Image 1 (cartoon, rainbow, N blue to C red):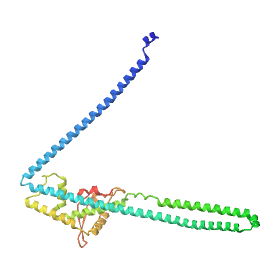
Image 2: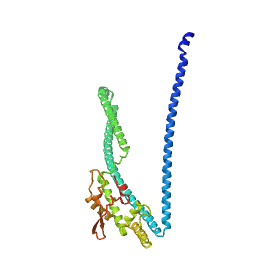
Image 3: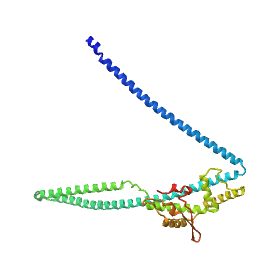
Image 4: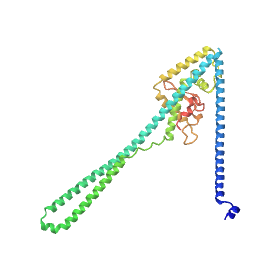
Length: 343
């Protein structure tokens, strides 16, 4: 035996060595995976640092550029106008977004109320039908119970000989009435269970607005945007504000101090007057109707019209006279109009 071990080796020792080799192999593989993950994380963090450094450099350059403009007497007033126009444009953007959101919520709530109202009417009608059946069933049950009592009383009042002669017939009649009473009670229980099931039903989920509703909402949103555009058409305020929101400071030269002061005064005056405007719901409705008559959609299920087909702005005066002008509010994306449409 010793000689065989010397020739072929120890099997238990070989098995242990193999297991150790396998453990070392898997440990090495896991270490390689962890190392690769750490390397990827390092590269990712380095890219983030590089991006942050680049952003910081750009911000510093903008700050230095702004400081140089503020120190320049010919540009300082233009800088003030630029930031006032940006703030004014953001104010208009927020106002349009609020109007759009409120309009969507109103339409969705109206549809929800309509769906819930219809569902409630159907449920109540079904419940009333069951309640009528329950009432009829209870009357039928009461008649059967009265009949059962009458038969039992009649049987109890019979003399001994008559009871003996008619016992089997009366017993069959009583058993039949008892069976019918049990069936009637079971039917009433089923009706009551169905009534409880109807009362316990959950409200239906409200489906989203259909295409026609979304289009109607978008016509109103565009109508509101047109009224803002017309309100700020003096000195091309809407265009100047849009330009300021898209370009960097120092690109646009608005003119001398007197011109800049005039622009600032106009911005403040028109912005304040816009907040006081009221009672133009009829104008919005009329304008939306005229927009809908011109609107063309690329696809049947599109909710937003092709921009070029609704580029006519309708200016309705106090006498109802309509004047038209061209301004592609959707195409030029005034006040982020394309982001507030219902889709």
